[in-house]
Amino acid sequence: MPRILVTGGAGFIPSAIAIRLSQLPGTEVLAVDNLSTGDLRKLELAQHPGIRFIKCDVNRFEDISSVFYSYRPDHVFHYAAVVGVKRTTDHPVNVLHDIDGIRNVLDLCKNTGVERVFFSSSSEVYGEPVEFPQNEHTTPLNSKLPYAIVKNLGEAFLRSYHREFGLNYTVFRFFNTYGPKQSKDFVVSKFIRAALKGEDITIFGDGRQTRTFCFIDDNAEATVNAFRNKEVINDVANIGNDIETSILELAKLVIELTGSRSKVVHLPPLEEGDMTRRMPDIQRMRGLLGRDLLPLREGLTRILADPSFILD
Ligand SMILES: NC(=O)c1ccc[n+]([C@@H]2O[C@H](COP(=O)([O-])OP(=O)(O)OC[C@H]3O[C@@H](n4cnc5c(N)ncnc54)[C@H](O)[C@@H]3O)[C@@H](O)[C@H]2O)c1
Image (cartoon, rainbow, N blue to C red; front, side, top):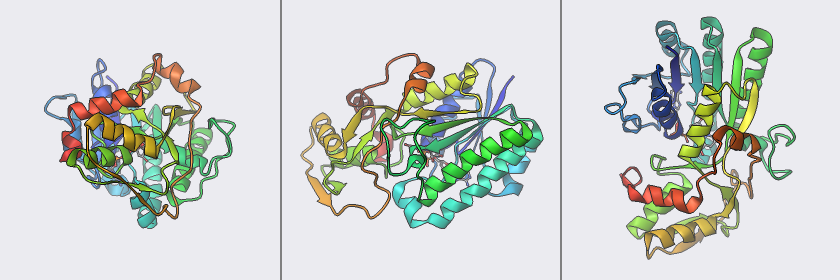
């Protein structure tokens, strides 16, 4: 029976992965999280008896090592990280501590014979874009901010541990992902929350900066398929949507779907961390998913069917 460890398991994307993995026949899932931004309710443990949870800090070797040696996972999804543009630019030193977590996890994977480690990298590794769409192998990595550098370094660690110790890996470069259980400080949740409360929707700059928005189910299904079907081994896959939407268009769509009276208010542009544009080449992801991605309007409608996490 495959035993799978998911780090950051009480987080938005990792909880979705943990739930999906626990529903595969014969799997056991252990989720660990220090609950810094995570919320145990996201794992819905009562409905998913195949998941166990341990509160644990992956950046502290003594904490995560005892989990590895007692649980002996066959596969590891290392998704724990300090996230969020504001949090990571305000606390860059905390972000750099995540290098310890990456090294801890990889050393423990190597020493306990883990079959494959899956790493949540980010579109941020591409930095300010130099080509579109951003391709896993041809687009240069221009990472400058600590969060992006740590992700880039994480990828380098994985390649190096594979080369030197034969540890198999998969890198997922996540582009903006959204869904009902996302933290309140991310753009989609923030806009929906403001619209439902009739508060102003604030945008940094003119709102013409574009993003692509990937619904959580598309992310989770594609990545779990990479695990199940033994794909993207020792390689990288962009995981995201490739339809560009400006932040202003997003705000207008949220206002339309909620029927809100909220107004859009523009603030000065952020000094750093707000890229003008991002757009992934998702040919690989489409192969993993094997179906169309969910349009933004439908994803937003699904969130609005039960916005309890966002309103909490
Ligand atoms: N959501 C996105 O659009 C997006 C985009 C690119 C990359 N990612 C990556 O995906 C992963 C999941 O992000 P998310 O959006 O679900 O964020 P999230 O904050 O909901 O999940 C991260 C989880 O990690 C936990 N955590 C943080 N530091 C930890 C530590 N030292 N030990 C144990 N647990 C720790 C947090 O408590 C949280 O539950 C992260 O690695 C993030 O960098 C997300």
